[in-house]
Length: 401
Ligand SMILES: *Cc1c(COP(=O)(O)O)cnc(C)c1O
View 1 (spheres, helix red, strand yellow):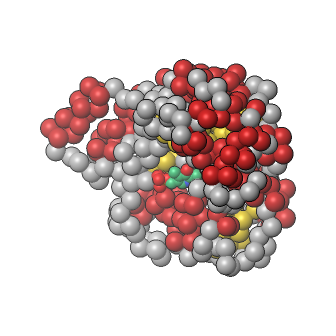
View 2 (cartoon, rainbow, N blue to C red):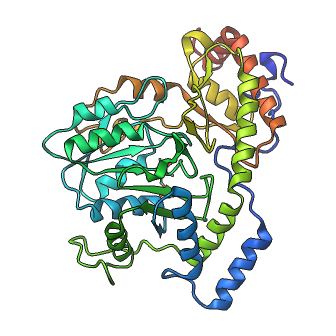
View 3 (cartoon, rainbow, N blue to C red):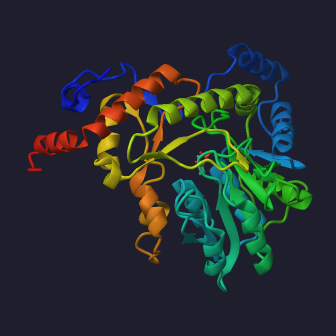
């Protein structure tokens, strides 16, 4: 346990952890089951093109999402692009800026202009009232994002979308298994996209899926995914190769087998952070929402410099020095990134405040409660000695405090 600021690794102390702890380390899977599935696929001599494992994965993800169709893909980014084409969107798509770059870039890649809207100041999720204000003559859709293994206000977004006759779809890359008001959150809107990237709670090496109750849309997506061939063909976009391979499906199915265990582990990790950070001034977990059930994929804290006496960037640097590879998810926000930054200017004060304050802390099955206790010890030390830490850091950088 570190007792003084001199024990911190950035000031020459020993790392709190010998091996780095990451945000998004792959969750543990049952390797025997994985290798059984891979052997089965090799014996079956069917390695891609909607093989039996991919089809099984589609059935299971559709059920989890509470919808009739799941179209498995190579990743979520291509899935979002395919969905933009299948919905025949043009012009502008309203979306939050506080998200991973892939949300905005997927729309941009297919020739659409993201219009960024601010988030709710408490939850950090897209604000439906501001979405309604942002609708204009060029708007062709609303793209909601369920951030951090939590849910955005999907029913209110549905109301805005229907008031304006616009399609609503969701980037649900973080939201597998989440519910809102008891309803699977991926069943809101016309369609939702999951990611099965290795950093996500369910992982397929790479992978994605579009879940939808719209059978005709699912048909068009299946064609777009397979070079624009087969039933559902005829998109002006032609088609692409967006298929999920059997190897990815074998991994994704095996990861899905362990989903409930991973969520329970994450939940217990979350509780350990909540206990360890209780009464640390200026370090706040985002407030609980009783209407949602989450997958606890990310543990997000907000560092309020005025109360903590230390800013997020220095906290991040200190944690990384200790081999705690926290991440500032999502900073910079999309509107602060090229190619959007030098285009239209967006005033997004809550997004910018979150982007300047948030930290995602390591969790997942590779992180234990004991490790979390030690991470919280470091955070408590740096906040209780924030003046000393900040002035030592400034001296080290050769600048007077
Ligand atoms: C990971 C992620 C994506 C991209 O998913 P890929 O499967 O890696 O393409 C999109 N949006 C969000 C919010 C993400 O976190």
